[in-house]
Length: 303
Image (cartoon, rainbow, N blue to C red; front, side, top):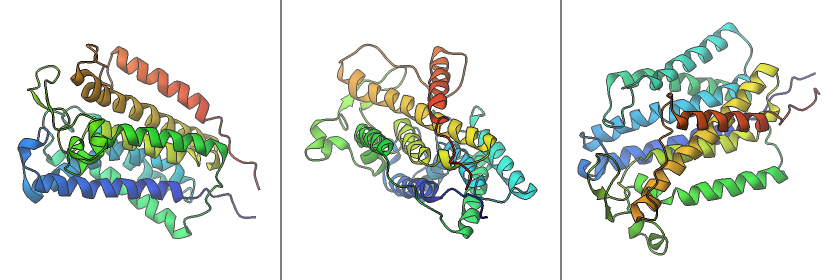
């Protein structure tokens, strides 16, 4: 009797999305002057590749770790596989060390190679799992309509960052340009200078969007992951991606599209880094609530 093996369609879709954004990041940072970007000083192809490396650290490192339970469910339970997964997790975790990815200096550093190696290991495990075929694709269900609706909402909110990723101000785009701030000059919070409402290049709101989309895709196959430990880890990974991503997207959208219009004087807290803050407690509470829901997507009965 053949063991149940979840499909890899959703994991593959996540890697394809991340790869497409990596290409867009490289091209945009290679061709756009650094003065129009955010906290980078190296231009040209070197600048593009360097910013892509930092992107591979974050958010790709976080998303790569989230794919591991789904990939491990397809691989043989051997010491070599477990060692590669643990090494990937440990290397990707380096991105949480202060200074590895510094919002005030987003040029690439040698330390960025370490989390990138962890991403490469996760990518290698996925490629190894694909040797057995991509596997089955779960049929469309009612819950998938909710996933689709959530994806449409986050993609719409992220339009300013999606165009910025391509090196275009959303305010210059016909029709939708009237809905969003983009190239307009607006004061920024804190010690930031007065600059365009939505700078060109990468945004942490876009990072959050990628986390949400990846979490929504992976949530389709949580129930297919057998083994109590892997199932719980898969549910935790999805909950973390969706909640962490949604909060960071909300923070960036609120700042750029509401606060900069003068519609509110209230700023949302930053959720980017863990710390002893109310924002981190809100994040933990959200992840715990989402985990309680996602883990109820139980594995199917043994065949």
